[in-house]
Amino acid sequence: MARKLTRKNIVKKLDTVFSEYIRRKYADKLGNVKCYTCNKTAYWRGEGIQNGHFISRASRALRWSEDNCRPQCYGCNVGRYGQAYIFSQNLNKEFGYDKAAELLQQSREIVKHTDAELLEKIEYFKQKIEEL
Image 1 (tube, one colour):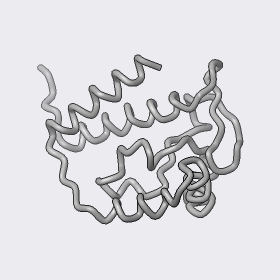
Image 2 (tube, rainbow, N blue to C red):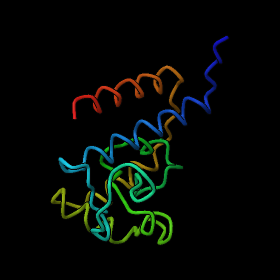
Image 3 (tube, rainbow, N blue to C red):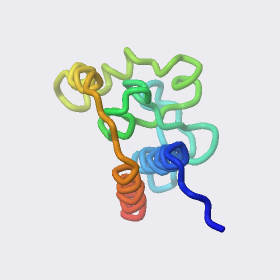
């Protein structure tokens, strides 16, 4: 008997697929990824590298935003609470303008995704992973 997908399970699945996509997107041909805030290098899969968020995952408007997320080592993402200041400086340098302020503004938007929208996002990021 197939289990009914609850919203909690859908969000968890989307988090997993999105995290894999972000880490693999920034990996080199050998699968190594640099931490966005300290430049430590580790393989994309495993404990070493995580999907770091500039604006916390609590913001549903940016939780699955490619602009808001970059690979981070465990030490920066968890141990140093995401290194928000360095993260923002790197975003601004990467985009060439005050991207951090733009993301902060977007984080104030109230977003309520339907289950169907979340399931579409899962399929979208699965497809993006296949294209890498």
